Image (cartoon, rainbow, N blue to C red; front, side):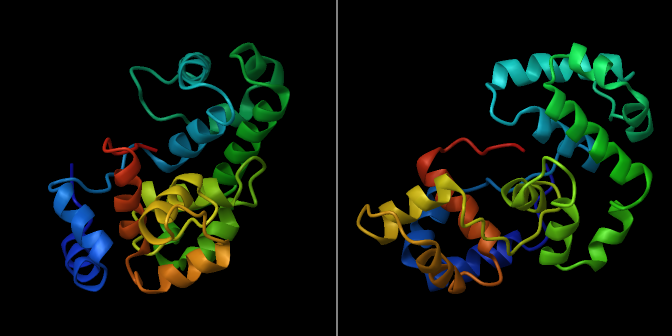
Length: 211
């Protein structure tokens, strides 16, 4: 898996400036963020998986792929998804709300309201706001997408429970930090807050998450 171009610089800088991260970076050598999937498929899968078990999400996802003509794991086609009736999407196991979300996502891609070719020119906050314009995509989902798909280096998902837990353990004697305290702590990790977050997640779960 290709390593983000900034990863080695980030780990050196973070280890030099933060003793906690220095230990975590040394404990997990050879691991790094990786990208998988295309943008539309990745976001659609994120919507499918909201608030249900991994097993249930996988079953529904496979049905959705089949219904939309995705063969052997090929990317979903936004145009084909947009043309599907809500009833067809619901027959895959989606709730009516999620079926509407998936079609709204498809409309954003088909109309180029979400245009991956334009994203490199956008700063993180501008891209997050473009993503949360889609029904069913909140800020946390957008931040995860920036980290795991766009490989943005400086995202700090302060609402993430895992990050809050790890920061509590390593920096606040087990006490959950306020969001403001978390933001202040994150200042020391600029411009590599995504990398710091990723290693703090590792301290809770050594197996890297895939999004």
